[in-house]
Length: 363
Image (cartoon, rainbow, N blue to C red; front, side):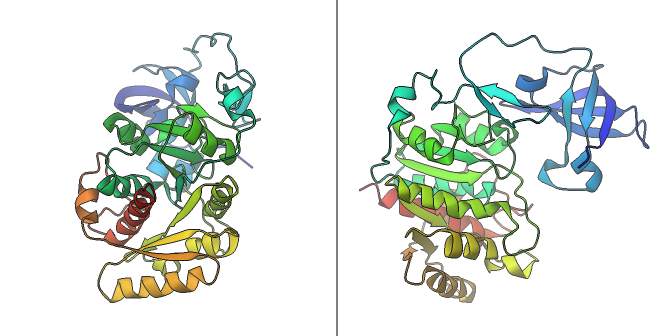
């Protein structure tokens, strides 16, 4: 268990979005002094960096060449520490017992103005809950909802299988700004949403009862973890989220993870992540939304989906007409594993089909 540390000096600032500041810094320690790296700071946690500031960086993922944006992460501005936060309510600690644990006021916290509403809450009252494996499915699912229900109020429940800070997601920031998302609810160890909750269950209830969502979308933050093994991937939690939606009286809808371009055979057609999470982990009956797109590839996906459903889940074929146009209106860039809409259309259309089906459940 190690962290690869570097000190650096900020040279210039880059792009900024809600809760995040990109910057470029020159390393002053390690084997490559003078090298410029792209880094990301979350000002709410570490303060606001400026050119000339000394920064302490965590470059562990960068040094290993991992994805998730390719950033070094700003751990601290040693010479420009932010002021202490004002004393306030809330005792939910997120990223617990890590060096950057942060304390937040949870919607389900005893000190929250929403506590009385959530204390004994136990029913989503049939609210459609679309659960996706990858964060990149989020804008596509919302586009599918809006294709048929443009005025539906959509909330995003972010689980902690990927990035923990909601501020890391440009998609969430862009969808919020465009009015496509009414709120982001961060659950478990994830933090920084419009609302915080302790669990996926209270996250779903907060989305329904506090946000007033008509449709809820659940997915992990950016940067899912996978090991190439049957059970070793963070998307297993998608099956658990489907169970949570069913237990609470919601209408769980599984968004298929589909690809026609992924070089890895286990992710071609319906990904093994979906077959495990939906076929093995999701014990409650769920709707499995499948687009009716023409062609041999999609015929194969439909055959896979029918086998996945078996006797437990409900196979739902969804009209794909108009979904390409809906996806083209997305206010944020559509990208999954570095592939855009043109490179891997099937994945985005499958996610949008789940959103369209959820819209149809609104009556």
